[in-house]
Length: 121
Image (cartoon, rainbow, N blue to C red):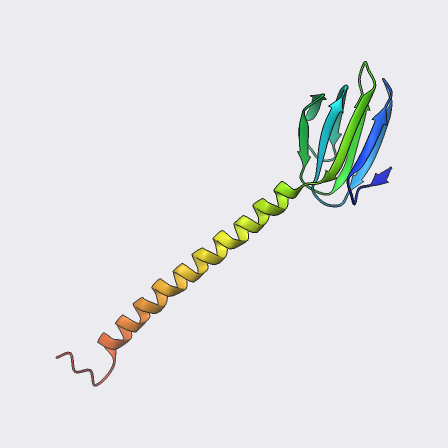
């Protein structure tokens, strides 16, 4: 079993099986061949051929088997996952700032109308 921290190439002969313990999102790209992939806790298995890729979102064991032919794989950290997470953080921050701005404006208007000794009468 291998831990994946950087981009790595794996070559498998037909029928070879390897397993990976992933600790963060990784991207599996099939350079050539055909592989069967199963992910611990996943609901489905994947069949990938040369030119296809699979984003593996989280932690756990990943088992890969080369089917009918030798396969060449590239495995590395998923930049897309980090960009998506970063975009979500910025969206949540923007909503929070926008929400605070509206709430602050609403409170100010309410306080001015409801304040004791107000000159609005």
